[in-house]
Length: 275
Image 1 (cartoon, rainbow, N blue to C red):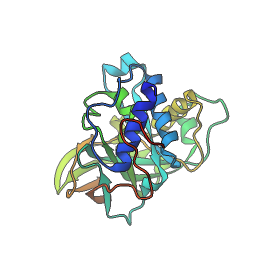
Image 2 (cartoon, rainbow, N blue to C red):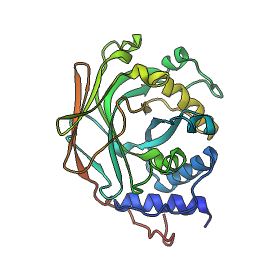
Image 3 (cartoon, one colour):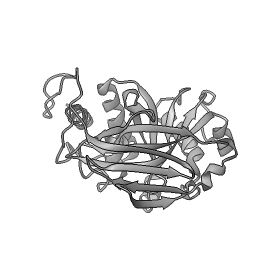
Image 4 (cartoon, one colour):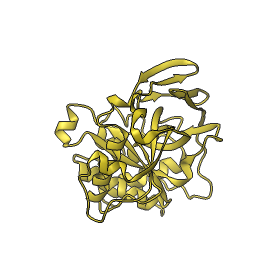
């Protein structure tokens, strides 16, 4: 078993078993292609359909070193939920955070081979923008501390997406200036607007087109793009409540400990067994 397969199997197993994982299960990736190769292997091992992609920011100076200011990870279909969902799970003894995000739905993919989209061209692919909450959770507690390449290697640190109400009049991009506020148990933990998010949620769509194309993948119609943490990454634990207010719109949930995934064999982390 090579290093890429070892890491992918360990993360898929730990996520299925909803338990922590320490230390990092192999030699850490040193390049973007290596990190995404681990992610792609894990997606194949996991086997669930991908309904969306989370996009996250890579901060300076690592953005210059890695040649990009964003990263991506899959959001599986069974972890995309609507506003009737009252709670979202995290891996309790790993890393867990909640993030206020704009959720962008793609109506159609770009023309085959088309990359380097302008913001206007990326906007033409979109048919809805909603508010939402991304759950960032990983079996590996140091996932964010160890940097973006490690984050990419474990599904970009995504563990679910709660899609809230649609943003009225989103096509004129005025939502970029909506005041966004995040609260944990009623206490404000972050405030910002999407205007400060690089080139904004539509820029996240343009980035994702290029990111997927480089991996031999495409942006499919109906895909959700969780476009980046507006107010920051807010660590959270089971039993707490997270509220995200976008202007007059609000989306909320409580946080629970994730159960073992039913109907799935949990593979030992030493790589024995089968996935």
